[in-house]
Length: 393
Image 1 (cartoon, one colour):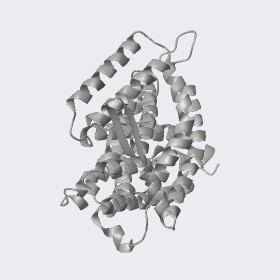
Image 2 (image 1 turned 135 degrees about the vertical axis):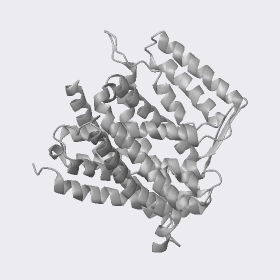
Image 3 (image 1 turned 120 degrees about the vertical axis):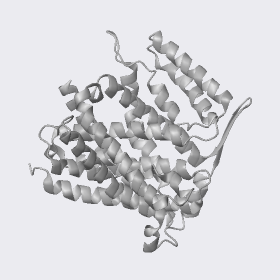
Image 4 (image 1 turned 30 degrees about the vertical axis):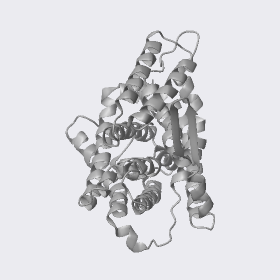
């Protein structure tokens, strides 16, 4: 088991270090274009209407919503596959090992949300963004940690991976409960029927991925039309794809997870970042950073994350229900807490959900500005701090 964890972390770090760089390039490119004469074309590209019509089924959305609702459903499918593997076979299958990252994840989501709410409680529209600073971008966080190579204790890497998985689980629950619009009973019935078919396929131990993917597409359409956010269809689908291997072939879930890693890391997440990170800075001054939405997000990501993770980790250790990972000290754990303030991808995604209905253009721009500043602070200070406290060789 321990060797499998080491191999998984080495594989993940190789992936995330390079994908994190690509993600940064995509975000910077979007910012440059948004503040150049090309912004008109950038905006027009994202607003291109894309329609699919099959008989009475009609889906019409601008390109940016196909990215946020469609491509991100594949991203959440990958998260679901990783969650399932970790719960049944990995770190989350051992109770003793999940207590500390679980406590840290809860604190790391609660404190940022409370800080944001403190600044925006008076505004019924702005308060919808309370979950924006509660998220962590695992690609960026792991990418920065990977820069230090063998200087990082393997237990610290495993702690960050486990914390990020718990954080993703929390984000999925938040999206399901708090970012669901008016429900359509007919579409929900179709979604339930799709889930029953997936359960039947799993129970019969069907090993081919094709029927799961076909039913998964129907599930995505049903969830999209139901009022529940469409990306959750990816998570639901993941939990019905068989994980156990037989003597003849590898697990279908592991095969799909392996196949998706490259496309998600190098295509889907950079495309999402490029589509959502373009912020025109015209009219934005230093005073804009002190408005309630961006200030709540900046302080939530940079201060809330580290305070929540460290406080709840300390509580778990002092109560005697958890202990620090082997060869990891509190200074190193604090460095990881700083990196968890990099919200970027997940924060942008939750921000789009929070303000897509009833939010003004100013809210969109303010939340993106807060995410970029808060994530950048966490990334740069986290890097320099870890460079100081990690072993030199």
